[in-house]
Image (cartoon, rainbow, N blue to C red):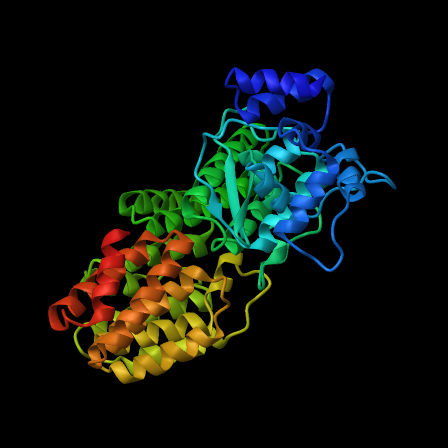
Length: 483
């Protein structure tokens, strides 16, 4: 009966997703079963095609396919005769059927939507496991009308794509899901009541710790939605709870400012920095207010407005409130960078920054300060050496830093490689500079950092002016132009 339906629908030009959906609606079959029938295949034929494509020591049999087909999908328990496919098996079955993993879990959906974001295999494995375990009820559309998040991982010759609503994505972050995969992720309570400052702060911590896993745009959309949730919650509470939520709003606005800097939207970066400053002062969070002053100094460094940098640094150093050691260090480092632009290495400021960064963090320190450690200080020191013309010292520091950076820290690696390229160019090593630039461009694309891509353009222009005939220089310039 199903075969006759499929034959008829094929003759009339129906697409595979339409046929699969019809089979599911009429007979109540799971998606995997419906896909097999849509291609008029037996369980044995599926096993044979799987083994032919991916030969293994223990080949798949029709019985294994039967176990998979008896499983009713995300949220359904496994049993002796019903077993969910592994992540690898899901990916391979999706390749065989020419569909997405989403389609095998929930049935075919409209292929339109947001472009898939590239994540590591571990991350998408965690997401699939969470969806299977929790049976997300709002997948992938959301009652609030927000655009879903699509994430993709490379699996051998194919890919796995999983889609979830932005609210489900934020819930995964708030539950410690993605952050749990990350080294150095901020610790958070094992549980936090939804709607509390602790709950929203844990969501933010997941975005911060996983900033290199998804593009800035994906984080921005979810965090803006989180701010709306906090605003609704603040309307319903008072007293200290209301003030605590305002503090979290300031922290989220700060991260949004940084994310907009990454996509080279300077106006939005300043807008959110202003929001963070205003909310921080309202909540009495002087550390955040100071941090946003230093964000303004960082933007001034980008635009070579060094007098503005020095004015801000002096304001921070002589503020009426206590400034955390990490922010004291940032102020010294930015001061040193402004001095280096004039050809002077401010050794006193650099050494003072190292001393401040060596001070152990207090339990009361804001969580965002954990990003400012010796590695940040070394990067700024190398940048000072570059500006002052001491390229060999910069190369030594940057190469040492790169060896210690995790391979998944795409944005950090991109920044280091971009500056390493400038250092090699200053040392008259065009091939090394171009190779560093190419590697930096690759990492910048992986992180979605337009800010770093823009930082690479002067390097490409410099190399082209001085060494236009070098093969690697031409490759780097072409790759940057194509991006």
